[in-house]
Image (tube, rainbow, N blue to C red):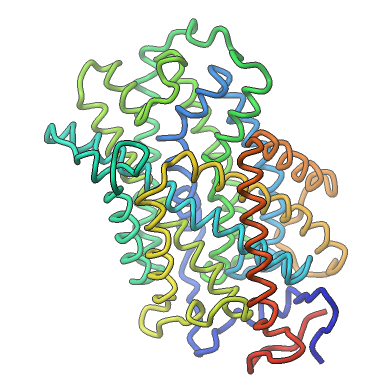
Length: 479
């Protein structure tokens, strides 16, 4: 019998069994090792947030932006523990969506998947917008020419359409449909390049370090640090995308949690070094609100455009790799939702030739190229941040629910200091949500209301766990 109560839940075992092959009989392939997975994680994280968003965080927190980065990292650490346990216990493509389905029920799972449209889909748009800024910096340093503002900026920022943003999304889609092996190799190369460029930036910027630039330290007080952390949090978005690769990773129960911890530690260290180097080389007032701030700093220190061109090249590579990795995550979440009948079946179909969801990928590219082309970056950043924080709060709750409902489930990792760690994770997420401001809360509330309506009118009725009118071929409900 199918569940008739208000809450429909699938067990971890059922989710894993259903992920083995899609309805067309062509499953995903386990081709990613630990190194590729770490590179994939770095590829998903390091991009617009540090290359473009650093100046916005400095505008809020001043020199205390370093504290803002640490505060955002602490929020991520608690949640990373929860992601690591859930990712090792339920190694499937759905990430937070699947974790919620196994613990909190279908309705919550759908809303989590809806919020992941912000974390993965809309953040693709945000990241792509920042790509155009550094592409112009690179073109200027190489040939002394830039794309006209009308074709490289959205309306409201002096342009008509952001063509580079559309181009980078299209290029990522082409690579993704070719196969996960090719995408993983490209992401690994780009991850190494952007880490090397950020290390080079630190080496150059520390040559001009002036301790006086860090005083006064917290120019806007605790409120500024909190607000800065909410902005800086965008720089960490993407580490959870590692769990979307659960079906394409070798030994996922070991490699998924290990990759999450390695990525988060490496990225936090790198961000703090970049922030200190940037503020030390150029005052907070000069960095705040400046597009392509890292290139500007290097140009000032080296008194030439060559160094800035190198940084711009690194940013172009870095941001492109984020688009690639985050688009990958979005397609896998949609594929999992489609398997469950909550969205149309076209999203679950996998090409037998490339073992990738081709139609799914192109739909994602087409839909999110539109806001990338015409929406200003700051509007997209705020919504992405609050949507991600909401999902992370749910993930921390889910790890508690999984311990209670399925205590014997095989896990490759267990949250330390349980249950204190997930409780602190929820508290930190709510604290940063508070820092986003009431206007963002209102937009997010409207977004959630629309999601609830979509679920009530489509998802709940079409679900493969629906008591009547369900699609054929669905599995029996879990415990």
